[in-house]
Amino acid sequence: MAKDQINDKYKDAAGKKWDGGKLRWDLVPWEAFEQVVERFTHGAIKYGPNNWKEVDDAEDRYFAALMRHLVAHRKGELYDPDFPDNLHISAACWNALVLIYLTMKRIEKERNSKFEDK
Image (cartoon, rainbow, N blue to C red; front, side, top):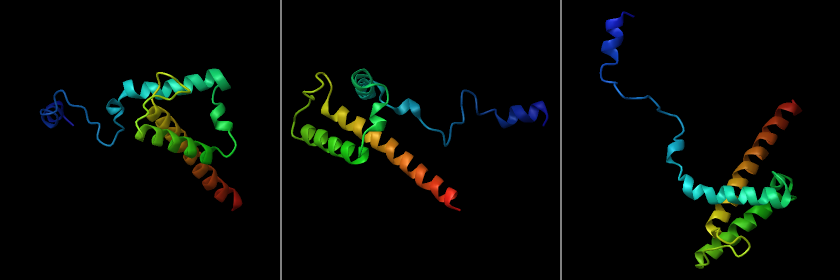
């Protein structure tokens, strides 16, 4: 392609970047997400890094915790008495994020076991 053809093709693209179909990390409200990260940090100090991955019956227990925090939030109790300065809704988000991770890992394991059985 000749240089003038390239210039013609992109003449209206000044200052543009083609990000279609890519994840929009810039949309995440990081200041709110910081409370969730505080919970990961607190858990790492109290129980050891990533210990939450080793909990027995994890999906059921984290779901129950998620619901307890959502109900407390819905009843108007903003802060978690077990973790002052951290909102119940942040704890709910932490539990939901952990459930997403565990569900993804379970699906991955199920898919891999199907291939191993063949």
